[in-house]
Image (cartoon, rainbow, N blue to C red; front, top):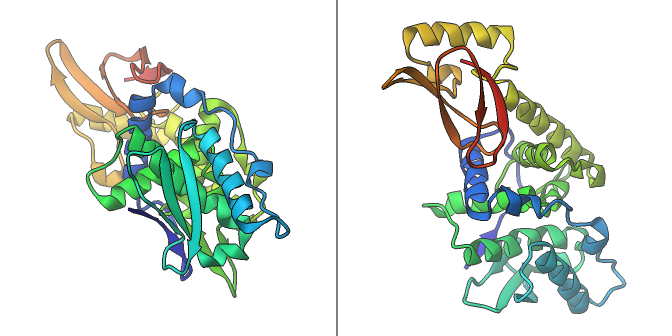
Length: 297
């Protein structure tokens, strides 16, 4: 059984799970292929998430769940939804299928605007279960699930459920709001779709902008040619020393090769590590996502 995160107290901010998030992006490209990721180019539409108060509780919940199943390309999976008092937002039993039982927190009987967000996390769990994709620990698998939900176009709902003011502290999922923003921005860079236009929460958009700022720095990290002057100087110093200082946040590593020094660094799209010779300007191609990268090694 898996549990959907539901934070009602102080909300954690920043990027504490960034390494796991990036590992999750790599895992999704490996398991689905980049063409498979691109097949999720259309985000989960707000109209499919709508659950008006006048709708029948169970029929409406089944309708939203069925839409989520279709979006995540699980045509032979059926979600059976029930409501009960519980600590978490929702839980799902991961069995052989085709029926999966999702229990949802009783508060969604009346707070219906966030039901689709809770279902996005649980139905993504089913997708990853069928793909046989998980991480070594439960906590890491929950981060993987949130990352997959956002990267495949459904998890914008989890960020939109984030609301924080003097009276309210609410967040669904295990990523911080800024980490959700980072993943959605990475998706936008790959697929050209800006899901932030669908946000109803001002705090969600602010978190998205902070995540987007970090995502925009990824293609400007040395040894990529777009790196700024300060990073280029640091890279040149590290290259002469044959080592990088991880405390300073360097993601590249130098190593000896049969024909001279090499540098390894993550692809800014899928975070698969690449290795290229240190010989000035060159073009590298990521074997996983097929991105062409201009480098200055």
